[in-house]
Image (cartoon, rainbow over all chains, first blue to last red; front, side):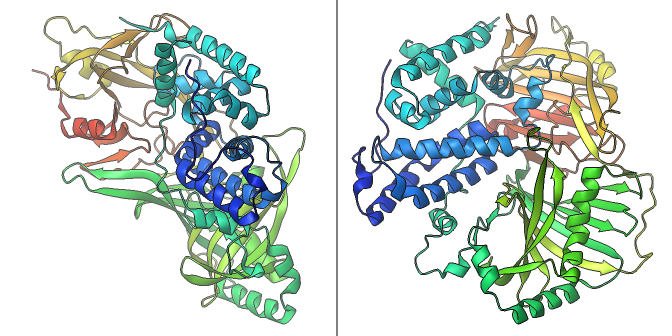
Length: 180
Length: 443
């Protein structure tokens, strides 16, 4: 499997940059925001189930990152650190949703018979949370194992194993649907 | 995992959640404001919000200091004027507006209109509530809760705070002036008032939570122009609403009696099954069969459409439910005749609970039509999921227009009294198909 690196933001050296002064740190966060907003929004949408809630979460996460930038330890890439914040805020946002999302509604309808994106979402929603997050970060954010590990605060080996399990679980449910 | 399988999973995930359009949401300055990091903005003005209806949420992180510093005399003056601005009649009348991510597309010109909704509410002191829903200025339908015991406890608490609590808080002095800012081109004062303890239905460990509101009042008119909700002090996403008007009315000026078109609110519930009885397409189609199944002349795209043959046609009754707000457990069940037309290819599920069922093959170009004589939740018509009821009014889609869902590829039209959901690979494909709909005439 190709292990592509974290997409570099313009001006990013990837590691340890938060030792710079605060203005430089702010610029680093801004660059990550401007160059990667679409991917942050995509992952947050997958987690929250709503584009509007996701947009709010991404805005909130970056605001938090700005406020927390002094507390950044300088290990790992800035972008992976930002991903951790975005994922955590989006997970909080998903829990705050009181009304069932479309995904949940379909899960509660075992007799649903339409194989459509909503059903695929329902199948993905049936995976354990860690598997879901690893899939989202791998495929929506294009992060490599190291960056996913930093974002989710797990080891790279666990990322690989989790991704493998997620693929296997999805395969069992989806790939056997074949064209007639 | 092989590259092929990797790309397959990627494609699958992208199908499940297509990349949203970031343009409407990307706003670095809003992030800076939220973080309280905007250069040159005084500390007392670090009220943070996303100034966008629907997604807009004000974040009141730096208001507390302002509350303490605000001169008491000025507070009283502003709040007194705010109270005077809404009047002292017994009936409160409020209209909220928020934008939706849905659009109407004029099928003739292609012109798109972003959809907005207005909720107009009247509440009298007995607890009778009348709500009118408008979509893009057109009355959609009315919901009526005609007095005692018709609203759930949660609704009573919610409505009483939104409609009545603001005035009470101004009267009894519990409302607090928290900041003065620029908001949507106007100077506004922000007024915070404590709501009440409410049962937290989504978290059983913390059974109660404190719900409150922040209201922006126009600094010139002193009338409310915007509000958002907080829970335990945390702004709640997607609760921001523009307030079009607030007024109080004299007793007897509003009719709270039920009429034929009123109904109480509730939740439309999807119960899952789709039509699964195939109509034979071998040889010449017996056009009477689908008409008989639907109970009306169906709409279709012909026996083939843009090189895609009619792969299958299914008929049946779709079960769904409606749970009234006052007693959700008393869900009523309905079975509505419906048809499914699939153009393109068919697939058969070989695993899972849908084993043996036939689907439209979404991996190739396709158009899927689902139609019925009333909107069925989960059959394309999931919106607005909480606000309609059988016989209680119809969802308005202007004639000759299509309601397009965010994310593309799906839309709704009403033709000849038939509610039709159209799904295709892209928004353009769905719109193009909508333009080609025609009656399936019987000989």
